[in-house]
Image (cartoon, rainbow, N blue to C red; front, side):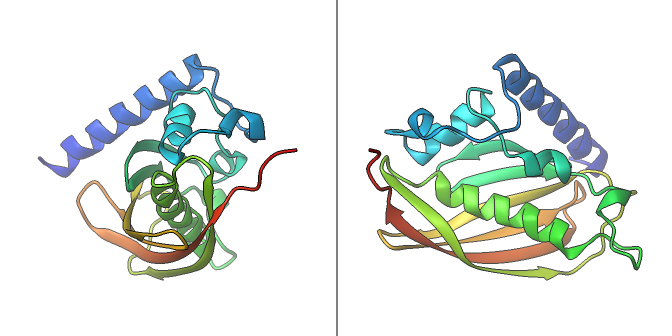
Length: 182
């Protein structure tokens, strides 16, 4: 598959996901505790993709979206814009970090059984190629390495449709029991 074919496939998939979310009532916001109670992480992520649960506001701010999930994996697509530049004229490192944190964190989230949650304890990123507003869409792919009762680790990569690596990351997450609602 050529990079142009991959890009066309990415754009088609992104449009289909956004349409499905919109038709399902998807909007930016915060999920209510009662809407996620008793659900596995995979069920929560699938509900978000179906538009049944809100997606985070940061996705609109930084122009990225959840594209697909499966157990142990999450894929986001984002396009750097001029509004994401730092004063020196390059894409701010926070854009890469947020995109990667979302991918690796959501990959871990897909592995959570009902009643369990996680929080990021450590995130390490390496930017290896500059992205720009001319780059076009990039994908952040997060994959779980280990998911235990107390710790989870995952790795992620931001790649272009040509397969070029832009950044990579690892995370360590603390896994815990969700306190019972009163």
